[in-house]
Length: 200
Image (cartoon, rainbow, N blue to C red; front, top):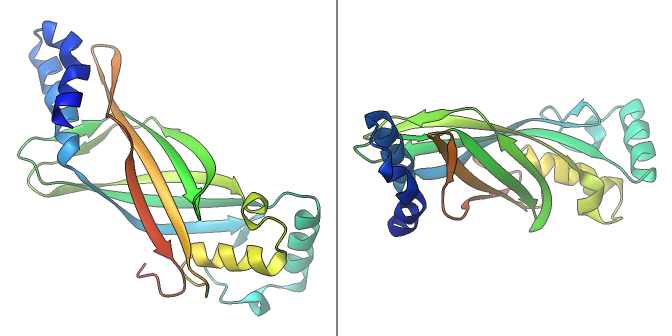
């Protein structure tokens, strides 16, 4: 992995600025960083919050009517925040200025996105929390299984469902060095099985 990063960075080594060399070291340090899904929150389906729902009886009649109508139309939008914790065990500060990401639910590719905020992770066990705001369509996941399946999956994502689902986030960090984006080789994969027994 380190060789791959160094090969990507070879063109910028000809630039002798100390600042540039420091940025090169920061992106190289990412290879040793640990990424983990800390929590999933602010889950909403059609604007209906899921964090106070335990089962279908917790939904009002108007909520159920709204969800049923949306499901019949072939679209059930869901929004959620994925918070990823990045820990840096290196003696060198790690940093990234861009993160391309992909979300998978039960191995189905759902949505892509980009975070353009700079993230710096302090050395020697320092950590940073990186938020990813994802919007996706539940209808594409449940494949015509009906309202109960949609509600159960939404509650699974909030850690309150009964049937486990797999949530996977693939992240490709990069850093801008001398006006050029230097990507991390490949994707960092963060995966979590989520259900009513989820720790978060």
